[in-house]
Image (tube, rainbow over all chains, first blue to last red; front, side):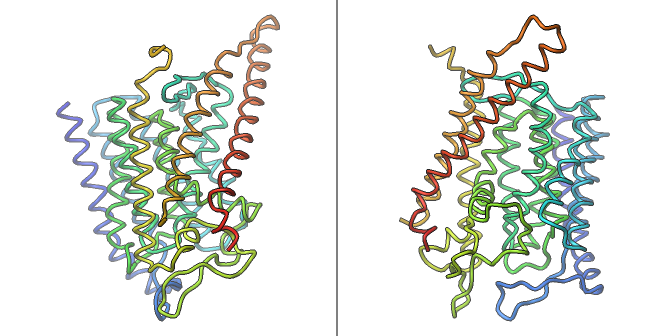
Length: 338
Length: 78
């Protein structure tokens, strides 16, 4: 147990400090190369360096590799860490391509589906899908589809909530924390430790990403966060719990898709929100603009960017609580009750 | 009212996931095909499970869409 605690503390600290140390020089480098984008919600529209993805992937790689040497769990843990690293790295490359060159709406979902391949090839999954109260269902062939869809969905949903300062990193900190706690409840300690670098890399990045942002994660950062989360969920056998912790982001994608009715790059559609004279965010009057979570949040009254982020974090905390309740319910079987 | 409706929608999604999961376990886990040889049994069984799962997912999305239209009627009408 002692070596697990040392591994958990060391990998968390490594992930946190790698982001903390690499982001300031990355901000300077990106600004120098003019890799900046306009912060449309800021008065005057400040130019913000992007992408912060390289710092996030560096933190995930260094901390997970350190776990490879620190964890006493042996060959299985080695394969699990390799699967997480390969999926996260593939998601980074996909995101970085999209950061530099705007690709079509289908590019990211399809490419992310391919990035799930290491999980399948290394066999770091269990084809029994576990549900609370009702038990498990064995779906050997169907589960391969679940793996592929899961990575594409988690990557894209996190990317779709990366719409304002601090939301993607703050949201991931909350969701990944809930996932880690859930795995501790389910006594899956080894994968819970593997999830800690994601929690602490997100938390450290939030320091620079929160309002007023000094750097944006970009597609490379958001896809790394989402795909790593999905990979950990599959490897840790907590797919349903992971989906529940991600519900506000899932709602956002669901609302978007059900109003747009096609898969499209967000840069190709009308902005669902606009600004009041005092620079608060309010809903647009455009009839054909998509419905999104932010648009619903500001429907009743205009909010500042910070207020919108706080409202989304409260929703994330609510979903995190539901995810933890679900983990507790995993131990309850309806057949035992009746 | 605040953001109460969004919290309600989250709770409904959670309940639908739990209920849908129960249906998947109850329906899919019972299926086993026998009598055509091991590989064909596996293929037929997987195909039936896939069809049931797809039907459940589509039903889940349709139910959720109905809830969404009811809950966010005013906001979506904007």
